[in-house]
Amino acid sequence: MAHEDAVMTRQKIGLRMSDALLVVDLQRDFCAGGKLEVPHADEIVPIVNALVEEAHARGALVVASRDLHPPDHQSFHAFGGRWPQHCVRGTRGADLHPDLKLPEGALFVAKARRAEREQASVFDATGLAEELRRRAVERVFIVGVAEEVCVKASAIDAVRLGFVTHVLRAATRPVTPEGGENARAEMRAAGVTVIEAP
Ligand code: VGL
Ligand code: ZN
Image 1 (cartoon, helix red, strand yellow):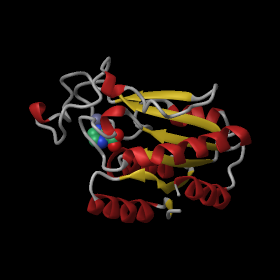
Image 2 (image 1 turned 90 degrees about the horizontal axis):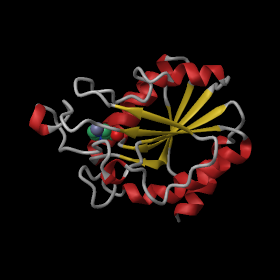
Image 3 (image 1 turned 180 degrees about the vertical axis):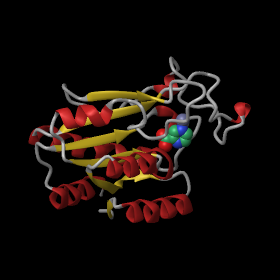
């Protein structure tokens, strides 16, 4: 089923060289058994892998981001934030999902490395937009987790920055179903195309 979804999604989007596939925060701590588990996050890994393979075959850029927090990040409960401690730099939970397969030439982005910055968006002070422009990227396709947090923030920023922006629903998961629904409404209102699963 996951593979069929991936094939359908691939046909719908027709990736090309001036595209970038953005894999957001597909890390151990957001997956099964992690410190901030996003329900069913593991299910998207084969779909993301198929999309990554397709992107690479078409000459599109693959970008993988990581949430990489210091142990005292402001988003953690202990420091007044809304999340349990997660994705702390240097810990196993911050690793990318072990089954995620990324090609040579993939671009890695680290974010939320400073205690006092939320940095939910992969475009927030990372230099990614400039790098995409330098590579003449026009469209970005966003997958990963969490749909209502970093996927949403990144997608809305991508539109603001002038990229034609798609979120592939088959390859993202929310923390809560309502969160996902609200996020999709917000993203659409901001000009993001949400491609429904499959
Ligand atoms: C994220 C919650 C806290 C995400 C990061 O990557 O979506 N969610 N930190
Ligand atoms: Zn975080």
